Image (tube, rainbow, N blue to C red; front, side):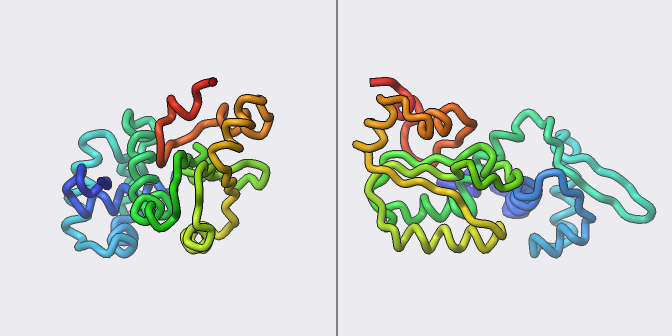
Length: 194
């Protein structure tokens, strides 16, 4: 199940993806058309609807109209999570889950899905389970090319994860206490103390 299953407008999904991948950016209508590959009238119709429901801010400048996504929109973070699970690395991991291996948990950091500046000291992706490293590397490399920086990830077996969690290993505690988005697995189960 992906966001296209919930939001039936293909154009709206493409517009959401553009704005949520590039937080804080403003775009002229024709640039949105070019980046989404959709017809101008369809883009204008969606932008108009999104503005009416207070999802977008419309800003006239000279003889052009620019749009930006409202970060105070009540479903902003929810849409960000949906997009992170439908596109790019998240979508690719879910589509290729069986090829990647037997994954118990996979989670992104909140910083990663918000497209915040890269921090080489923080983990972007934690995977717990048995992983086919070659398959995962293919997906990671593609995402690194899109983002223009390395993705910090950690893979652990379930036994190692449980051991380190019981020992309150500072590395694991830091990951689990940070903002996160579960891609695979039950968050409550992952966090419970045993």
